[in-house]
Length: 344
Image 1 (tube, rainbow, N blue to C red):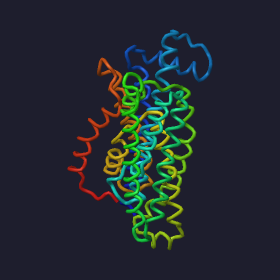
Image 2 (cartoon, rainbow, N blue to C red; image 1 turned 30 degrees about the vertical axis):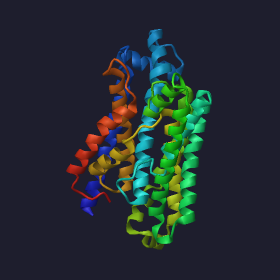
Image 3 (tube, rainbow, N blue to C red; image 1 turned 60 degrees about the vertical axis):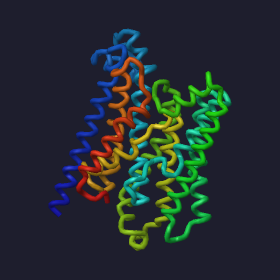
Image 4 (cartoon, helix red, strand yellow; image 1 turned 180 degrees about the vertical axis):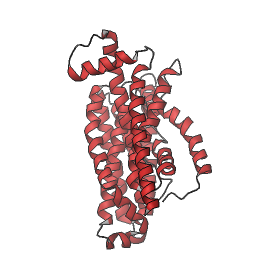
């Protein structure tokens, strides 16, 4: 009991330190960019934005922070945390550490919706809505196919295989759209969007995703202890009064909405939902009570760091999807080599 108490105290301290680090990094991120803004002017600009008082800050600083950096930084935090929590939730219900947020086809479906919206010359909001809807449709198709062909003892396996099929199908649809798209206007836009970027996010984008992400994140945080029970199998979980089918459905819905919401705004940003859960598991252990909050904070920290690198390190901003792949793949190999404990 004493060892367990010490472990809980240690993990709680880690979560507090991660939260403080995230707040500190957010404030630092407001200072960074092509136009440097001092820490005092950042605080004054944020204060004037929150309180509506004029705190004697240069108009150019206020404009940059309010219209460009604030929505981008907050969306970056939401995207990083949503992808990470989605990944760790999928890994928990499928009992597989190799599962990522696009396992059920949500990313491919959302990518197809966005590409279709671009070809049809939809507005920015129209593209995002179409992307979100097709992300949900892809997962819905995966679920119904698994129900139609699955057997009781292989439900999880059939669901993953159906997800792979649907993801491949929507990836083929994306290729068809890219093939028929105007090579001088539509094709570059589709290609750039699929790489994943936050360079054009606005307050409208933030308002569009903050509610679904907040609701789904809150649900997953509230039921996170139930994911621990799934480790012992469905029969054991049922004996403890947990409806495993309902639990899996709820987790899949929340994780899918998180993924589809993110992809509809930022495009396809890979590796975050696969690497961050592994890193979090090595830091706080496999208990979802601490694992999901740690994954949320570390995912936000990771993507914010990558976004800052994208904004300040290169003359031309590199899409986040490229950087996360360059950073994430080697990190994942290192984590696999260094990992000594089991994942669950």
